[in-house]
Image 1 (cartoon, rainbow, N blue to C red):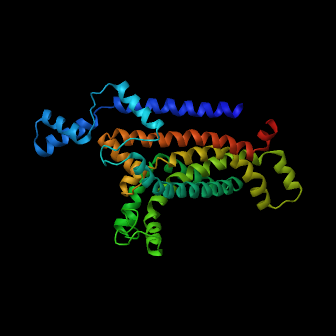
Image 2 (cartoon, rainbow, N blue to C red; image 1 turned 90 degrees about the vertical axis):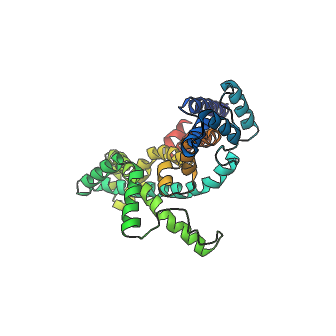
Image 3 (tube, rainbow, N blue to C red; image 1 turned 180 degrees about the vertical axis):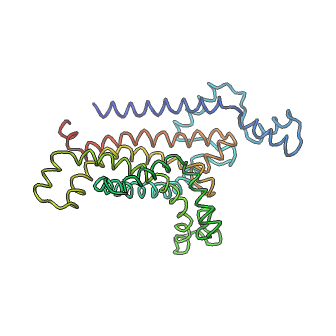
Length: 328
């Protein structure tokens, strides 16, 4: 019965978030017809009324249709497993998401797991050696990295490693001169082009994980069972990994699961800077052009991922934390 309640709550949350997203998108200033019409007016000197008529014809969309009617059509399409057709690309939104999602998951899940692993190890080590110079250095780095958006870090990396040193490419997901396929040349090009996007995300987020891990580990180091482990003569490495690390990492599991859910949305600014063909890039395009179907489809993917991640986090905590298993 408890699981039935959780699943029903999950469905209700997704439905509520989908409805709110639908309404918010349409009350935003501007709409796809006005956006395209103004482009016709600027570029071709067309009369505004004629531009509106042409935009409606090209987009096959009429913003004057009552909102409740549009909502009913949207929900009807969702129940049939359809996310609608992109107004900009004239393709099914589901197909665009399916093509973009692997790129986003590859870059940002790799970056998230790498920053989490390095941050946990660094935070655990600094907690153990907290009276050394490493402690203030970590605090300073965390303060700086948390105050600088990741797209600013990406821009700095592009200027240094692409423009000045020319070590890495600054645009695209692979070299366009290499044929697409499961070849060593293509895979190597994909990995080469992913270095800077991954490094930008890691550099901006590793400090958060390290500081969180350090705070948890410092609290655990004062526990009685740590003192007992030292009295028993256990090595420092055994205490750090088997006692401190495992218990200090538990509170971070929920945050990791939720962070992984947001990976599905990518980073519009980072992907736009690198012209990386992920979800964030297309989301940025859809926001600028007011492509309602694509915006709705991508926000729906993010919503489902976040809500599901919360449920997975609860499951992981129950499995990893013996106290929760005992309560269950």
